[in-house]
Image (tube, rainbow, N blue to C red; front, side, top):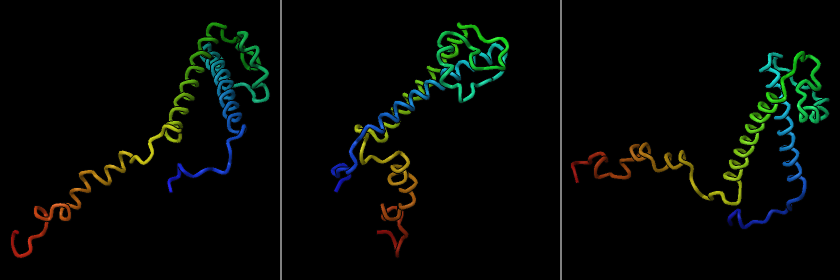
Length: 152
């Protein structure tokens, strides 16, 4: 019996979508903080990342343009323009990585995935030149078989 005809006894519930939403939000928050750290690095303050206790409490000041919020070691923080440019670049990268991950996951496990298709490596192992040459005596015994008392 095919696996697609079997029913799964565990129904879809709310835990998985909520987990995915929280993972996406956490990735966006970390991207915002990494963009702020990149802006401060460009200015010359070095790579300083916020303490995990202040990870969420410093979001409002960062959104308002304060690049030094929650970072005690920053002497001269980045300007709001540089802050927004760096945050935009990092957030764009985060969104691109998440889009690639979703597409890869859907291609591998999604409803429109190809079922029963061999990978290129598997097809080469079964149908490729290497296997054909290795089994040439069986495939074409008239050409590659060992002569037994002469040609047939």
